[in-house]
Length: 228
Image (cartoon, rainbow, N blue to C red; front, side, top):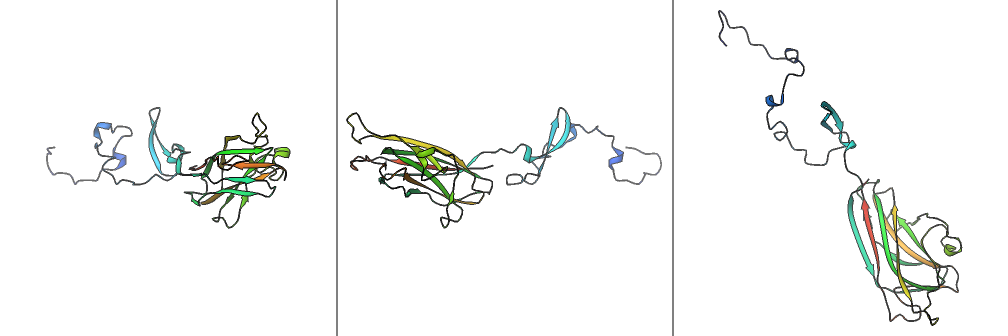
């Protein structure tokens, strides 16, 4: 710009020199975002984003839009070991590996599918440990009456049928299962399953027929860590 006389001293532009709301998109550099340093990680809950709320610019914490319930890890086991349980004392049929969880808020979804036979039966119980099996804690479910008499209110499966074929022989085994979402409130979780019969005259079989262990089966347990 040309001047008549002496050129005025340059002065720094300040916010008060610019009228509110006059800077348009065309005046912004196209790398205004891509030119900045990358965060390189998932934002923290209090990290802020710029959003247009019906045409009005506002800030919003990341915690309002972050996803939840994603699967963080999966552990899958299967076993063909057979068990013939005739005792009211619990028999452990499976112990999982110790899971290191991402956060104390994580949940663990345990899903099981078992080859089960029996005469009258009993129940199957789930326990958990937060110190790699040194101590075990109950998972509370609901009372099944006489069926879970030895695991009162702590069983996941009630086994209360006589698995007899049309000839009255114990040849039959069925696949049955459960799924249970648990909150260990720890970054360490280990699970195990056990079976007890309702009465000493009852029998439960896993991965076999009652009267012949030559006919086996396979049982499966899957554990999934679900982020909060």
